[in-house]
Every structure is written in C-alpha cells, then in structure tokens.
Image (cartoon, rainbow, N blue to C red):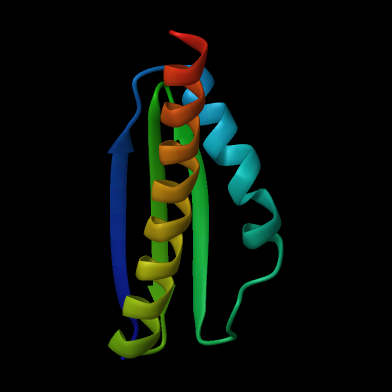
Length: 86
C-alpha cells in the first residue's frame, strides 16, 4: 500500500523560498531511499513538498528529513538576516 502526503510551507518572501529550493536541489536529484519519492515545488512564496512512499515508515523518514533540512536552512537565513540588521 502506497502512502502519500503533501506539505505546504509559507515563507516570508519569494527570495527566501528560492534559497530553500536551491539548498534542497541536491537532495531531490537522488532519493535517499528507493522506498520514497519527493517532489519539491515553489508556488509564489510557498514551498510544496509532495511525498510518496511504499510504506508509512519510509514516508515518515522522508518527511522528517526534508522538514529538518528546510528548518535548518530557514534558521540559518534568519540568523544571517539578524546579523545584517534586516
């Protein structure tokens, strides 16, 4: 049984979204596991992550990985913005 989920995240700007998309690009080229597949798309200032996996364990692992990467990149951008006084 295949498992699917779509996650939509809103960013404060399209520029921030482009940075996140760029950071995720190496991960989307080669899936970390043959058991899961992820499509990453930018829509306006929204990031849309579409996950599909062979089972819920693989789905959970893929979702957790991508959300951690997105959170890390977003936190780094926020820290840099605060250093710049933006």
